[in-house]
Image 1: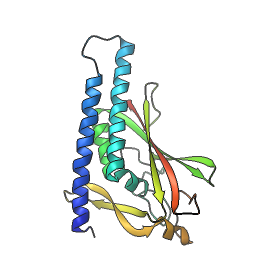
Image 2: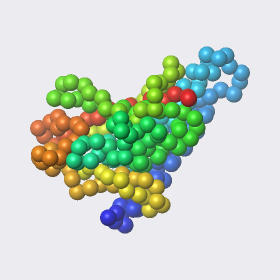
Image 3: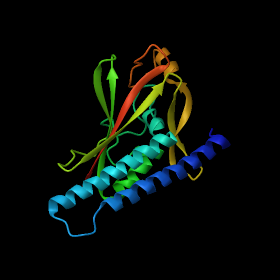
Image 4: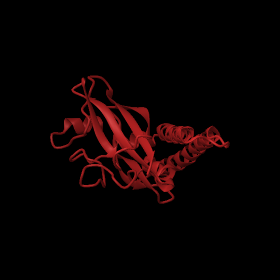
Amino acid sequence: MVTVSRAQAHALETIVAAMVLLASVTFALQVTAVTPLTASTSSQHIENQQAAVADGVLTAAAETGALKRTVLFTHPENGSFYDIDARGYYVDGGPPTAFGEMLDESFLDRGIAFNVYLHYLRDREVRRTTRLVYMGEPSDHAVSRTRLVTLADDDALTEPGTSPGGDPRAVETTKTLESVAAETDETYFIQDGSAGPLYAVVDVEVVVWRM
C-alpha cells in the first residue's frame, strides 16, 4: 500500500517533472526561428526542438526517479515488463508509469512517434539491447537522446500502481534485485554485472520522429 509519505513524494515528482519539462519545451521553442527558412533548415530546427524536449523528459524522469522505476517495472516471475504487448514491448505509447506518461504527453499527443531502448552489458562484456517501446522504424530525420541509470543490488522492483490523482505509476515492491537474483524461480532481464553493491548500468535511449 502506498504510504502518505510516498504519496507526497509522487505529488512532488509530478510537480518537478512538469517544471523541468516546461523549461525544456520553452527552450526548444526559442531555438525555432520565426523567419522564413529553407526546407532543410526548417527540418533541422524541428529536429533540434524534438531533441531538446527529449532531453527535458529524460532529465525530469531521472531527477524524480521515474526513469529508474520504469527500468525496474518487471515481473519477478519472468523478467518481462508489466502490461506489455505480446511481442514483448509497448507499441501504442509509453509504459503505464510516470515516465511513460511524460513521453505520451510530450510526443504521442503531438503526433510524434518514439522508441525507447535499454542498453546494458551481459556477462560484463557483451552489449545487449531490450526494447521498452517500439512504435516502428524511425525516419531519416529521427533524433536520439540517452540517459544513464545506475542500478544497485538493493533497488526494489516496481509494479503497477497509481498516484494520489489516479494516474498510473510504478510503485516499489518488497523484492530487490539482490533477492530476485538469489531465487531460482525469479529473474530480472539484466544480470548482476558486479560483485559489489553495483548491480548494472543501463543506457536509456529515446528516439523520436514525426509520424
